[in-house]
Amino acid sequence: MDLQEIKTDLMPRIGDKAPDFEATTTTGKLKFSEFNTGKWVIMFSHPADFTPVCTTELTAFAENMEFFTTMNTRLLGLSIDSIHSHLAWVNNVREKLGVLFNFPIIADTDMHIAKLYGMLHGNESSTATVRAVFFIDPDGFIRLIMYYPLNVGRNMEEIKRVLVALQTADENQVALPANWKEGDKVIIPPPKSVHEMLERVADDELDKVDFYLAKKDL
Ligand code: BEZ
Image (cartoon, rainbow, N blue to C red; front, side, top):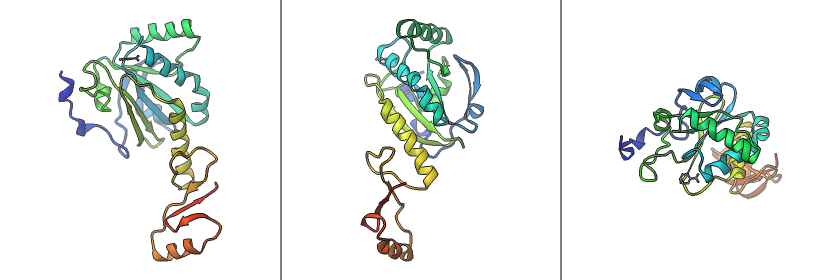
């Protein structure tokens, strides 16, 4: 199939329910909705096994496994390589770098899941998934999507930062300013009525630029 024919309007977007699927992975068969139950999931695609940038990226994910576990988050990789290729690559990285990719990697040889999640961008590559990252909450909703091209690796610190940001925003009903990191002040949602606006104006406790831009410590 010509990848440029894939309909991009079918791609899931922020706020959509993550499409369910069954997959063959490096840790066995997996049904996404079960894997996602009660957990955040970061699902990410890489272009191909045994390629340099992908090796650095999946190594970075594996090295941060403890962080993701602490954040109640499961990792789920995907490429359109076979399970045999995945296993050979996992073993090669284990031998050469001493790092085990101890999260499931989907062998999506028929591209079924890659198409379902819009991971094939035909003008970037007709043979490989781009570097997509989907942040999916425990209710199964897509909360943040990243796409990177084939020649630029993803930033693990940014992936960790936005995961903390999403969870912090949910837990505290706040929004987060540019470049926010854990420990920084958070934004209180703007008032929605004149009454709330006057209350906000009168509140001297807040770090306030004006009624619509007010921050507080958590
Ligand atoms: C890489 O991971 O290094 C890579 C993969 C596909 C195309 C180009 C680079």
